[in-house]
Length: 73
Image 1 (cartoon, rainbow, N blue to C red):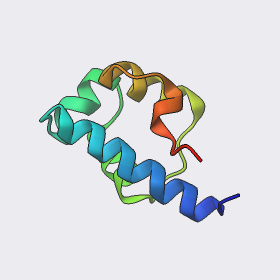
Image 2 (image 1 turned 90 degrees about the horizontal axis):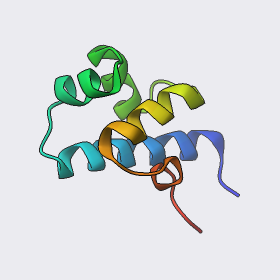
Image 3 (image 1 turned 135 degrees about the vertical axis):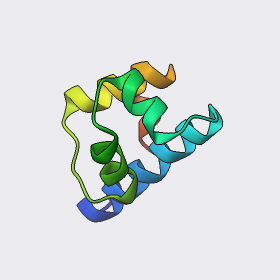
């Protein structure tokens, strides 16, 4: 098991990595996911705990299933 803070930090890194693999700016991903750029920036810093709805929006925008946003054991 991992702590909540570690999980959020790992999620933040994964979102940023997926965005960078697409060579997208935060603005581009935010637009595709229909979220605010400032909110995405907070997510990528691990400063926010996103809802499932937001995670679905992000996973759809980058073209992966929601499970790919989380590290596997």
